[in-house]
Image 1 (cartoon, rainbow, N blue to C red):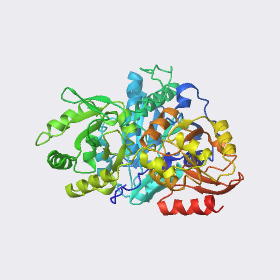
Image 2 (image 1 turned 90 degrees about the vertical axis):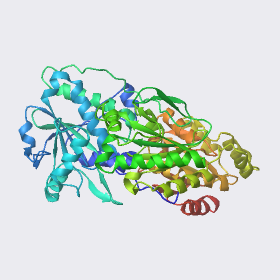
Image 3 (image 1 turned 180 degrees about the horizontal axis):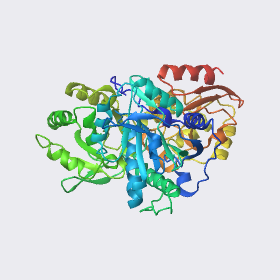
Image 4 (image 1 turned 90 degrees about the horizontal axis):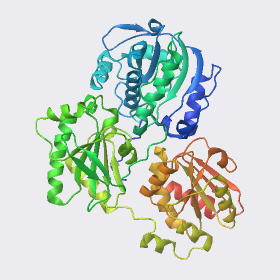
Length: 543
């Protein structure tokens, strides 16, 4: 990473299994509940919440909508209500949730008139009517929903009544990304927790439409029937052709040189000067051509644009045409494959298709031209080598045979819980460091480089193993391809790892002695190389 490290992405509650469990528990603690039985693609999609059943009266409240009119929840008795807690200035998960809500209503056709979309402001600092109006205008939802706000004490009373956690963390709003489905009788029937996944926006819309239809008289048909199987991610190592809004296409993926990628949406204009920043990037693009820096491509995330016309209309309104190409990611597969966690989002990819660097302007501010050039050059100078590179082989030369066998399987995703247990037994006589991770886990991604480095320094004495936990194999393999390691990972489950450590969430790292005894469990992300190295020395080399 560069010195200009982006802030922690908000809504981190969606990043760990343990955290999600705690949130659902708090939401339904006072209700009798049954978790629905799901099968097929919905059950197998880790980025799509199938919903948790609730049977509670929906606590009433009265707040003010984007038109400055008072609105009470009870006024919608007789209708199905989709109620989402939404940050009025959110650029991460909330736009995914509201896009799915609009899709759900559209999929019901005429029956959608009996479904009311509501939002309750979850931003404790941007509580004015103008704030909820600005979000509604930016997402072209003024006439599609009622976005409610009030004074901070009023909102806090609603949050408490609905078991919504809300706080400011590192200057960013961090809240439970909950969406409730309320039946015509005023009873909460389902709660959904939106994941940071662009590929599942349309799928979530259909899940919500089906649930609403089941509560409406006559159970109207849903207009489409999507597969809920996880969509394959399109990573920087893959060649993909994307459409340009004015016609034509552009190819992304491995090539002759690195590339700077800007992911954005037109509604980013609500929270920053998008027009000015896109024009400022023209100056970078011109400089890049002269100084042999990576050229720029802008990628509009179409899954959360309010309409297909939003991007062409925005580009036509710019004072000057952009000198760099703009393309559209219509399915979210590119954004998720490039690990986008916010809008806007900058990534630098190598010629071979590795992610070298990222920056989150929504939390750290748009970088100046000089800062951007500095950070890109620094990232290029530290371009990661593949695990099988000559340097890695030299660092691990002379490893004992059991450890050398691990290095030969560098970056591979191997069998399940039983295979993992067999490998641990086979490594008796050597200390083992196990890092439990998942491709959807943001803190896991941030510490991966630390484990890559530590495994090269200590890999001749210590066995490192990855435990890809509760994850899609396809997503995990794509993740490993982008994050080279000198050791393999196994497809594991929380239950399978419980024989070694209790996982409160991901990432979790545990240290096993040469005799097979678990010496220490580290819950959460390693923030620095020194902290990880110290634990390796204390619990693996001296344990």
